[in-house]
Image 1 (cartoon, rainbow, N blue to C red):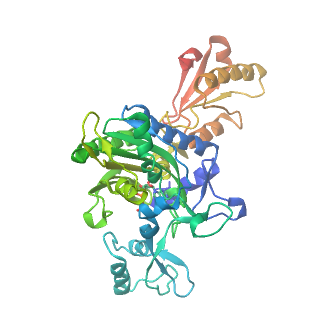
Image 2 (image 1 turned 180 degrees about the horizontal axis):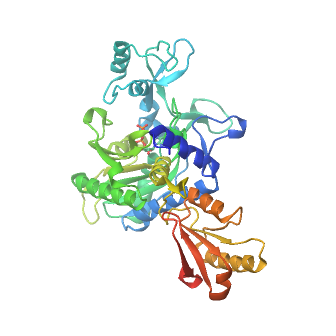
Image 3 (image 1 turned 60 degrees about the vertical axis):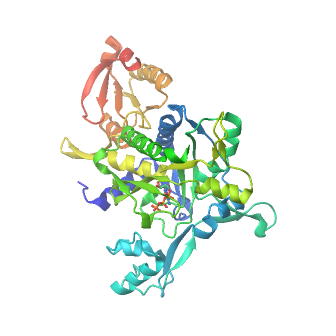
Length: 451
Ligand code: ATP
């Protein structure tokens, strides 16, 4: 049985690759650190998580609007937002082999909590404790490293053509604030939501998909009257807990961290990070921040366009304040995979299964004939398969190997129901449905499955 934390992580990474959820990026060419590719089952699970989020935070509400902004944006966006100057991590270097590390990670890995420390304080702590690089060599003093990927737009390579792969989706929302207000005249409070890729040149990507260089975010900017921020914050926090519950994440593994002022961005009046007990330890899953009018104020200052909101029927106008819930899809994937990963014993053998909630399972039903050399069984099984597929979509045909092997395979990918067509089906129209979690089998009519 794999019970140790890092062993569990390794087991999940191995299952994810073996069964077609997540592969290392560019694997065939030796990989590209910090990138991951989603296989057929992974892309389905990921989309289901993203769809569940969209349903919960956008479609089920009448105060949210969706947007989908371009990844490449005018460089002024990132100057105004502060990313060009301050989107940095502290970097130190092994003075012998020149490998580079995040200074705060070196401290954390050696049992020192770096939260709230300045870069100088981190260097002092390293010196004081005599900490070395993972290869045992002395470390250099730290410097800052900007995490944005730079590129050039167009055929000329000069200062004016510089652009960045967006390091967050949020700015694509803020830059569309005025557009949406002008098109829809929404009453405050209202939110804009976006899902999409974000890119960060992380110094040391690690822990599977937890810290990637290319990942997916789901963010909301919720615009409020400055006096009303607290109630909006509380409501979005409660709604976040509901969403995490609906993903099947156990509440005892979810923790709120009220981020102390010293660790918050200077413009944030309150930030709550939701941490999750991952196999790698308790780490940030997502965060909710009260960002005041910092972003719209910056846009107004740099663009010279008014970002003020005029309250309908009055002369009252102000720059709205913002509550920002920010989710990372990869971290939700990792939370879902690790909390659903199970090992038990069936007939004296270790069995691995993913106890995914039914609405997230990439495959809902696997259908097979008891014997694949009996044409009448195969024909009936095909009929049942087609009917289930028409109704549910994510239904698979699986007649490889014996029944035991099929069950094991379906357990590992989290298929809740395996349906087997046997000779009794031909007589009374009932099939065997085997439950993934209990392994119990019951006879059910095909009509019942389709109802
Ligand atoms: P961390 O402190 O772990 O680097 P962060 O505080 O920089 O994260 P934010 O800028 O608040 O993260 O980004 C919002 C969310 O985006 C995070 O809560 C996380 O879910 C996700 N995220 C951020 N960086 C990464 C990454 N490198 N890989 C995967 N997801 C990420």
